[in-house]
Image (cartoon, rainbow over the protein chains, first blue to last red):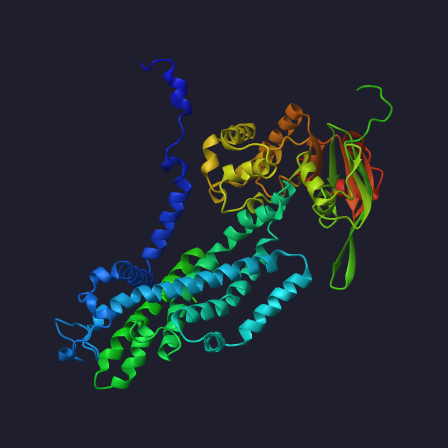
Length: 308
Length: 263
């Protein structure tokens, strides 16, 4: 029998992590189950994970790390794909596989910063526009958003880069500046519907201030579409950055950036096809991966719009 | 009851009007309502749908701003109170909504929902907050383990108990119950009414009880007010009004209660 003074201590012991978060764990297991049933979602996830691993460990995984910094090995220029060089080599004799792998990190950073800054500007503006009772403020934010949406993002980014001067930093800044309007639209629409929910009124009846309501009630209920859009946009942002690199306004050729690589490889088409095909394939698979992942996430987080 | 001349009512409203503008038409949802509630009293408000009951409930808490009229709580005019003062006053007056399914945020656990009033009002935090939440769940007879559950895992009656616990968290003196049982199964309705009756005795609460269910009003209320198209048709003590309704509309309302035919 346990000593008597131990019993209350046992009764007061806080429940374990598994007990406290049993509901959350169940929810996540349901998500995982739904996600696993879809082949395309899993394919997207696999591609994104592959991309992330390459970005994190690229310099250690690349077979010829030295080739990414602009090594010149004229004896092995433009070799076709072989066992030694699975993707072939470029006009400087550098191993293309190594360059594509190391370029992953640049592309990931570009995508993360562009979507991160875009969401960072767009989500707060959208929540304010959706929640405010001032027609003037909402009107101002939404009209500014319309203005940006009316001009194609890439064209506007081109103009900004042209004004700032070419370069990878300016390319990222320009794309980030044109990326936010989509988030404003999405979040403002969602906020407009969530703010009419009874639990928001209940919170107000309890005496909650507006920032509390926005943070604890509005934002969490807007999160699903934001996550889905973030995933979709990662692919598009990588593509947009590669486009700017391709026309020479983004990363500059010695940098192993995919768009810049294709830009140089263009002049070696079609005889040395593998030169442009390899970075092109990398862009294609990245965009595909993030889009499939986004689709899969939408199916589980936002089931109402599934199957479209 | 002490023999003081006319005690100050806990809540009183005079000439309350709320006009909604919809499609270029002005709708007078509440049209010149006076009411007065003594401390510890339960006032029932009955009427058909669209009679302005729920708008009245939101008006007295200033969740909806009145178009005209005055509201006084505990002898103090609160009609023009600014945001911060009103926020502090909300400790004393709380509401339980009709639909517990939408009154709880699906992304927050039961514990977070019950703790919310205490946190936003800065009443308790840390271990003291946990203890308060446990006690509140005890008060509405929910297992303490429910604090880690999400609303979608609970039944309608359990959700409404969570809403009641949340409304009680700040130890209010006055509670508005906006049809708290009409979204629930009949078997669960009785349980919720029992909880409300018990709490009223234990905590000497004052209720404004909105309902279209006359049997429920009869069970819980001291006085009853009949509303139609935003106006008060008739009011009086429950027993008297149910026994001898003066107005034709009240009689219609009483007669419209479905009864089983006698064999």
